[in-house]
Image 1: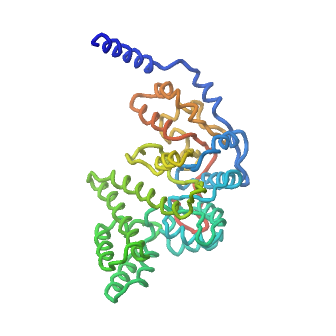
Image 2 (image 1 turned 90 degrees about the vertical axis):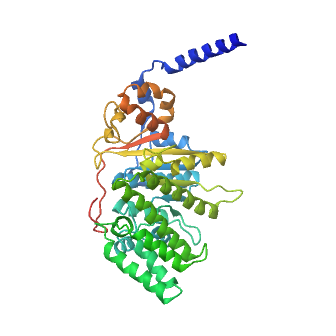
Length: 410
């Protein structure tokens, strides 16, 4: 028996040694073979890269787009992607990193961009990502909304506090609670500006305790409208408080990420249950910041909404497909601003035309690519390769425009 165990141990060590020695491969040829151009002019996603991508999607219940915020071309690409998903594969829903109350209102506007702009100008912090291009995307997708069946799902925490408190003023059951709510509303209106978005809900250390006290005073029935609004406010203030306290030196920054991702998942399932049936599984496209698009843990240490989408799709007998979008020419001059290790995936620099790099084809060779970068960068590159199914590069982009609202450029 001892001899057998020693033999097995030796075999295991030998196998491990082989596994740790990467097979030689022409990485340049591998990248070239799996990098394909595409176009998205006039809202039409086309070309070899687009056709390849859609060849990967027949069994995908979810498509996740991870973005760099406030970019000009990314929402335009997202609109073209959503349009083709809708036309060819029956996708009908877009889940976004936006305030749920704001998205509820936008769904009722059914594509009326002027009303979306007016909402954003009335409540400057309500629609967090409100560039001209982002608002145009919301208008495009909200055209598909029907009564009781919204086409956009807002999964973010409460960002614009005033609309919540305005409604709560009307729901207060007694004069004292109404007066307290009105006082908070007046303060929020004064403090919430586009130039200083977090002054009330994030920066003020007393906001969480005051909103918690307001929720207690309301004593709202669980599941009631008042309860939903108050829970949204308290949850958001708590999540923001972790960020504020972390900036002051407390070791609580992780909870800002983990509790926020958990909120995304709960909010998603609320919408999902409303439309899913025994015979029909809703197909949903997501558009979130790139860290939320990691399969597994994000660089911030939280198991993401994208990871949930991948695993949930598997549980449904389907799969998810994750895309990370890297624009160049706006806030990021080069693909290496995503991380210096991106040089291993784009050794010739940023492409001159839009391309999609198939990371699924790269993943079996990940060790070869990881070994090309300094040791301190290897973990980040390995995580990136396995976090996404594809990288989309949008060259010649720019910072988003803000002409519709007149808000300052971030």
